[in-house]
Amino acid sequence: MARQLVTDRLVLRTWRVEDAGAALDVYGNAEVARWLSPIMEPVPDLVAMRLLLRQWIAEDARAIPPLGRWCVQRREDDRVLGGASLLLLPPGNQDVEVGWHLHPDLWERSYASEAMFALAGWAFEHEVDELFAVVRPDNARAAETVRDNGMEWAGRTDKYFGQTVELYRLRPADLDRSAPRADLPPDSGAR
Image (cartoon, rainbow, N blue to C red; front, side):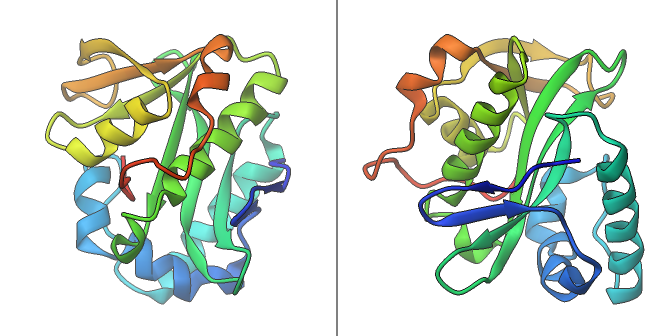
């Protein structure tokens, strides 16, 4: 089960079914969904979002740390901003991917960087040797976010999800230099 993580501005916590409305604002949004396709299509309605959250909650209950899915919530007003995850990448389920999905209205506020840093610290506390971010070649914002957080470009690959992607890697030794800073440039809400 994913542990709650707290940063200066965020709480990363387990999803709840009552988060469905706010989650639908993110996962039903075409701007977010375009970066998740073909892995995940836009969630069409509240009923489908509730079902998906129930699935994520059940998977999270069985997940072995550090793996999991988190609801990203702003501390100052408890607003659900989106989601973040540490998941095994197919095929082989050997590589751990860090991911985030935030509402487009929030993409340029460095929330993704803050969530990513918290998840990286959590993963490395659990003896993960390296984290990967899988970025679509045309997603310049996500590429900038991962680079600004210390991730190094590892090349292009078609190993994951049946499409060519840019692969970025972060190792524990890189984490100190990737700490969130107030001067970070804008970040993306999606992969």
